[in-house]
Length: 285
Image (cartoon, rainbow, N blue to C red; front, side):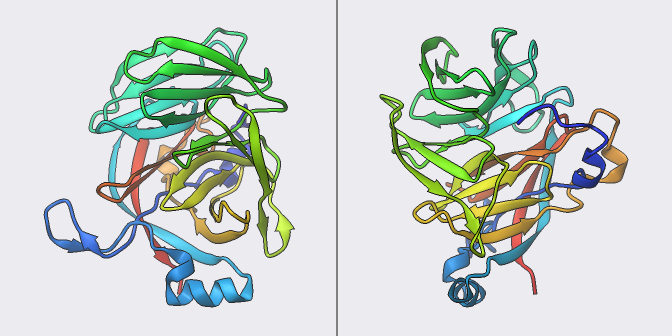
């Protein structure tokens, strides 16, 4: 979402973060911890789930790569060894292809200036992009960025992801909507709750190993959500991801989650952040 106040970022700024952790084969063929532990199935997760309390996580940074400091990041998707990224602000909104190692923008298409770009999801060779307050979305060829069609939805558009079957949309409330990607009809909704209370301001989304990961706008946390029930099963404390020395007056909040399943890599960034962080999650003691 939106035009965050850069000053309020000061508390939300050290936001941050990334995720990754299971036991498997690393990129060099050696054993390593998984980036994203399966919270409901770990010993700590089972206890927390039984008590109705989310598992708490922290993180460690595995690697950093450059990120365009001018990008007001709204959506981030790992694809073909790099990222697709949507950016916001009227007159600056775009869909981009970004090189992983350098952060260089390889390809870009601008969105009409009346629209404020928001969340992004990719299914097959189609990229779906939301706008904030116009109730309009765009479908692009994910390889050529050719606009193929438009679609409409009610309310605001904030974050977007997919479980491979449905588009999952956040609108700033505690509700997630599941949409048919062919007709854009809402097939079901779920209210997101933590310890029985609704959680609002759900923003950028990413589908990670059967869960919905969600930024909470202006907060230092990322939620791990059971998409069947809406229950928050884990909370990632992102405090301190972006060093104070990297914060400028126009630096904005944490926003941007991408997961690469083949090598189990989790990436995090923010609006006008200078880096993308690859992270590994750790259960808090």
